[in-house]
Amino acid sequence: MIIYCFHLQEFKVTWMRNGVRIGNNPRRIVSETGMKITAIEFSDDGDYSISAKNAAGGSFLSFSIVVNSPPRITMRTSPLIRKQKGKKLELFCEAEGRPKPDIMWLFHGVSISDRKCFR
Image (cartoon, rainbow, N blue to C red; front, side, top):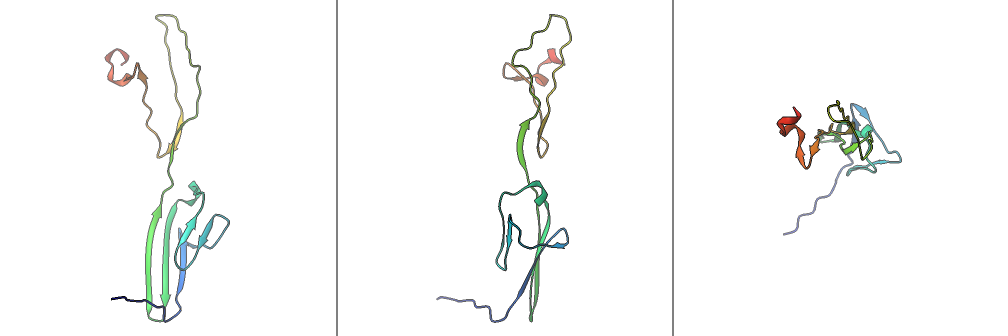
């Protein structure tokens, strides 16, 4: 059995982002059948919805887009640090990413937080 579905009436589709109607731009194409975003960016985060209406009624769908990014260490340090025995040594690390990355320091492959001598 083959069943065909035809649109017997015109219907109107509206795309919204954070309650504001959206249309096409160089990175985003919206149509009656979908939306395509090329090179997604953090600014594309938001609450989206699509509504379709015709003479017989309407339908509505909402969803959220959350844009993530991999961690990237943004602070550089020298690959070799020399310090006199008994002196205090402080190391800092800055990293960005979405969600915010967890930072873990290792000494000979073992987490420093797991070693009692570093507490």
